Image (tube, rainbow, N blue to C red; front, side, top):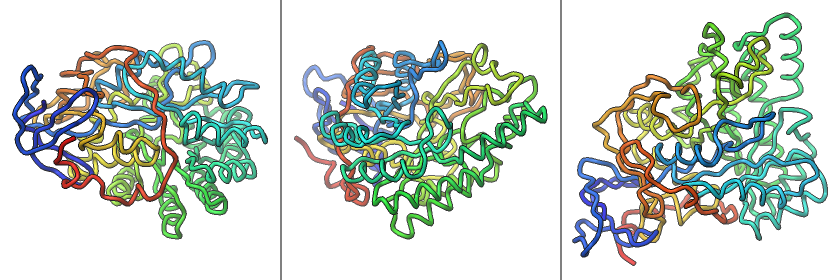
Length: 474
């Protein structure tokens, strides 16, 4: 039982009690009497919101001999403490592996997870066999999203024709194509030129990946998706120029969606210029932008031009990993941490500072990700019949973000010292309290693989979260 709280969904804010039985929400009403033996959580003065869904994570990613700093053990603990109850992680294809073989390897890696999980399959090499696998991937494995890169030539990048063929086949089977949109060929040339001139500091990471090249690639990806008649999801939009391309595509009817990330909302390019190589901590792609982009991105979230907020959690330790590029910015591993703080950053700088409503917060952190990536209606709202993935937030209490108390397996925090007004008192995953007052209380290995539904555009415009459908029983 959760009593006396204020329920927040993507459409409503209202006071009600919640009864959970097993893994599901079974009753929502103005007042529910506790049954004998029921555990009761008093949520007076708190918001009750659906668990966060982070659809952009890179846990256990291979990198040289060590990999990213967080695997599914430390990463899922960090997520739980931060209000994230489900993730969709990116796979990383091996040489001469089929998509299905690679997926099954990643399922094994994720079995230790404390929270629920699914996967986006990255395709970094085109073949006719890959096209034949896509319907099998969706129907038999429940993987209804893939990812293509327009950068990192020789490792991940596909060309335009390959992108078109893959998108077209994916669209035929209800698979959403995620796209990393940067013009990799020109960026590679600009990086080489900067290094040749002795410009090796972290700030040159930003200078060699200008916003115009993100915008150009974004427009190209959207046009290819339009011709292929396929749903497309532009990941980590960082700047005004790229967002404008998304908005233009939406206006002409392209089935297009886009995300941004917390780092682009509160950090800026000046962090890359910090002395003593501190700027190396903030190297990610696309890079941090001029501060003027931040309010533009917040406005995009408020208007719906940006559909979701993903962490792009690709964590590398400062010592021993980021410092590999101390004398050459191009050697710095690209990625910043964020899975533990995404929810809090969005709540503080979005809700508390008046940039987005409570309902919009729920939409971008839970409901829209669930609908876009096939987790709805099991996840993404506080409603009868849904999984009891719930986050209780006390909006009047404060905490300070610090690496000293984080569960992320890192020696720094990108948001160190920021004060958050809004403390997560309880986090529930399918009815289990997995975090309480900033401490992980769950069990490793309890996370479940999520077989996801095919994309269907009708879900995105519905109002199934309306209060009339929530306050009932099963």
